[in-house]
Image 1 (cartoon, rainbow over the protein chains, first blue to last red):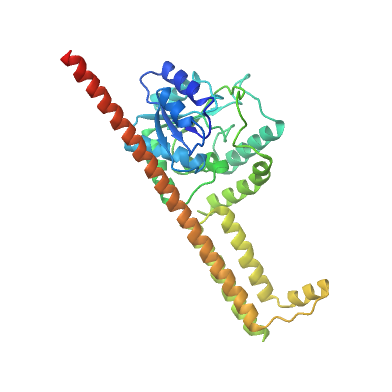
Image 2 (tube, helix red, strand yellow):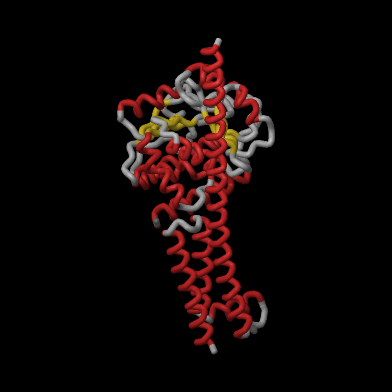
Length: 231
Length: 129
């Protein structure tokens, strides 16, 4: 699945190269209410598109992907970004542990490769390392790149996580992966990190980072950790 | 008079905190909202339990402490109403998101069906030829 919001410049390329490498896989673009030509470009490139009626945020787009995966009985689901920052070759790395039963969820990590890191500022990097370390030590999970959006799931993981998401209230985008990691640990799902490479962004700006979002992130992180320990 | 305020304030504070925990455990509100209302409940409880704090604040700000029962009760009722609205909004937001997801899955299903029909039509045409 490829969640996309106003990514007309890159989404076509991402879909085409994914389809070329994995012709047997279904490429689903989850359009998060884009205002540009993302839907048309994705369809032209050969993807099937699930359009959200308005901009709902990345976490809802991902949950829509889970819903599709569960309803249409997909064996494995892999998420990559529509901005072209994830290498398609790394999808194979995410699928391998799922195939062998070594993991139920695979998470890409830019910190496990020597050349995987990184095109971000040291502030973002520091925030990522801090939240990964905090969650790792509080919840006893082994993660180095908890906010990484390149992930894979098997049927069991989707079947376990989806009912929880459907039952509970909306989870904010910036802490979605963090919550999922904690939930996976609580539910006994096997999580494994695999080394991936992050490519530089060619078009536009990141939607996950803005000065305002970065200022709010520590508060969200703390309230999320309180929430997860209370529930 | 202090005792009555104390009783009402403490009751509202306990109701807010208990509701806050209950709704969080039921996943009906977000962690951020939980912390906010926990602080509000705590502050109400603190000021009700130790009324001398009001006098201290009025001395610090140099104002006269003239809170009457109607105003205090009104303020507490307003806070409880606001909490209820926050909870309902949170719930409506979640429902709206679920609806959006269902619409999206429906659209995906339609596009799948469309493609399937196209493939079938193409195949039957090639068979005829």
